[in-house]
Image (cartoon, rainbow, N blue to C red; front, side, top):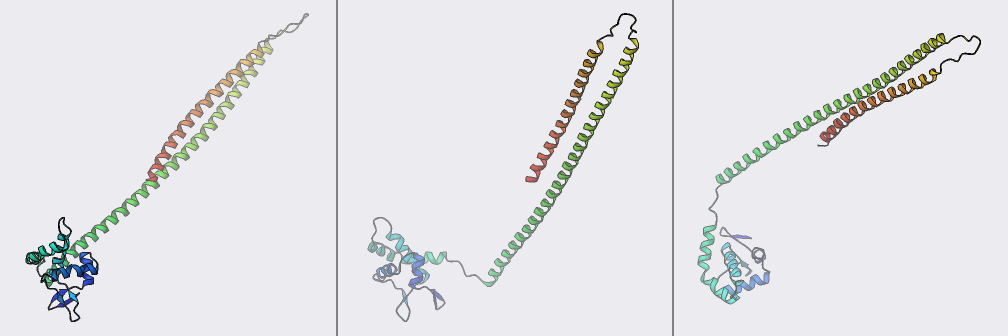
Length: 250
């Protein structure tokens, strides 16, 4: 790219990238235009220098040549007849001269928008930080509640087991006392043998069997009630643990 008389010019190697042609095809298209008296500037070494208008004419030439029914020759003839229109349209579409004040103004707008974006980014980071802290607090509270519940559940289970053992022991003591008192009563009521032998009642064995069966039934019933209460507490504890794990996983 060169500047001649404050105008910008491009070499053939630069133009080929703009029009998407090879060097050879660019020279071929330009020669067709030059054969029809179109002039392209050249440097001291007779190398072509293309202006913005030249590039616009060449682009229109390539576009027209690709249309159905056109050859390179017919497309060149039509473009030569439209050069003035192509140049005028190119100049009208070019942006007006931009002053330093305009550039400074646009730069100020860009800086303001950038500052606004940075401020929003800082606020977003602060909100995320506060949210993370609250989540950590909720997680700690949920963990504490779960530990307290597990401790209470363990204490209740231990207390329930101790109570069941104590009640069973008391029941056995009462049963032994009742058996002892009944034995004493039966002994006092047994007649003394005079002459012929007198047989004592045989109801003691059957009474002992009945009391043993009643004792086993009571113990089994109490054990079933204790297991039911323990299962209910374990179910509640599992629900809280699941709730805590779900909250912690989020």
